[in-house]
Length: 188
Image (cartoon, rainbow, N blue to C red; front, side):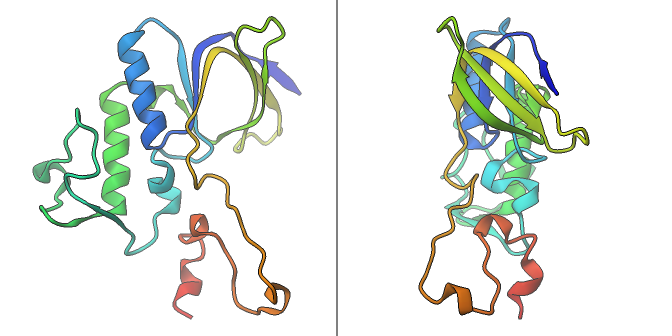
């Protein structure tokens, strides 16, 4: 079953660093426009989304080098000291706080995966087919938008290489995206 939603001024696909930033800036420049952010996961953050955080994960970046210029990651709020690597849970909280502070969070549709994108028949905009992962009917929704920004990042879909001997390897093989789910196998 396919349902159609009314046309939207902007659809952003992805609620990580870039998707949140572009949505925030667009909202500031066009406060009356209808904007939707589609996110396949259940939380903001992309790489730093709640679903991907495993024990001990930290950013390679130091405090002060990995933040939005208009939303400081202050020590009194986030507890990370100068010259320290930023814990993943702190990055997730920071990105969620950013989305809430700038009015993006309420426009995010979580658990929503884009299955197809095509130009609208009139040639003015885009038609997206989306599926909601927590919809038991497996229905798709068709969304129309004048503008589309793909901010899906480099790690949203695993790219698993093939290696000689892979078929006889008996250990677990999984993508970094699945480290949290597979955390128990890392100790053995």
